[in-house]
Image (tube, rainbow, N blue to C red):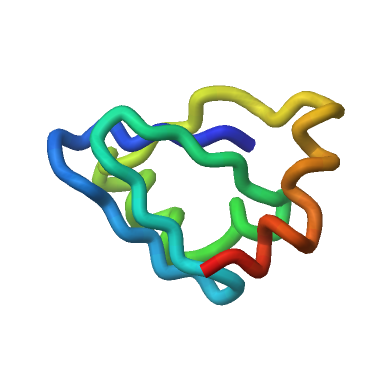
Length: 71
């Protein structure tokens, strides 16, 4: 899934597998497992980040274990 920081300031999402820092307008691909993370869900509820679209089949390959372990 592709998310985007819709806030006017940077947003930090501390998930169990990794931490993502998104500047205003920045986008990030997430794995299906990360989409269920409680901190991400809070950020979605307060509209600090938004879901842009599901990941394409090509992008799904990019969001594998290598991406999930980035800090």
